[in-house]
Image 1 (tube, rainbow, N blue to C red):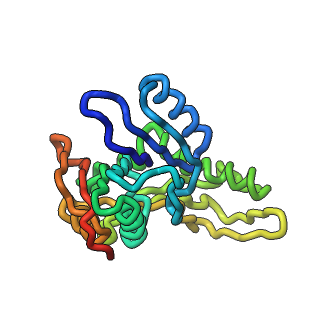
Image 2: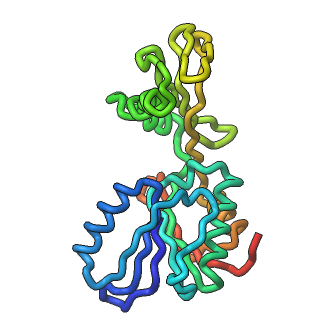
Image 3: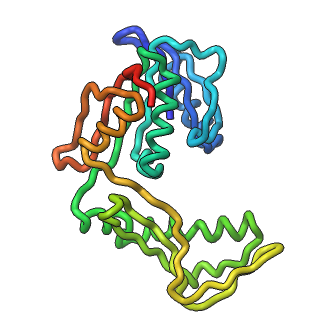
Length: 233
């Protein structure tokens, strides 16, 4: 996520504050941006912005514009997304703005394939969670004993990703263990999809007023510009 201050029209000046939980990625990105825009003041802060956090004291309150690219707002449950956006609206003061993108609802067949692709890229990403658990918890998950499962839950308007045990097995880690039945699943991730109207309503509940939106020709994705309305939830 990025937070900026208004720049002179036509010039790459102003200030940019970047936030991400991945410090190494953030550092590399800031170095690249600083080389491209040497006149811009760019700083970085490694932070989990899904939790409440305070902006640095030297960041002025006037004309703050928050930029949230990608579509990871969908990884928040709707109530969590509203709370997160409300914190941005409050931090932006009454003249603050938000530029955010979101993945829209589309045909179930398209969504299912996107999260269970033929090349197995998403499956590898999901299964790598077990490698991470083995490293962090000193567990003994056999990655080959699990399979990736993903589908669109139309009732909740979200993609669900799971890891499913291929057979009955016991997983051990330092200080504990757990038995998994064949077919038992670990729910690893959700990705909520919105209609254009539904996301505008979410922004409104969070204290923003939608100013303008843009979509691709198929209407699969949307970018929104919103302004803080002063109506706090």
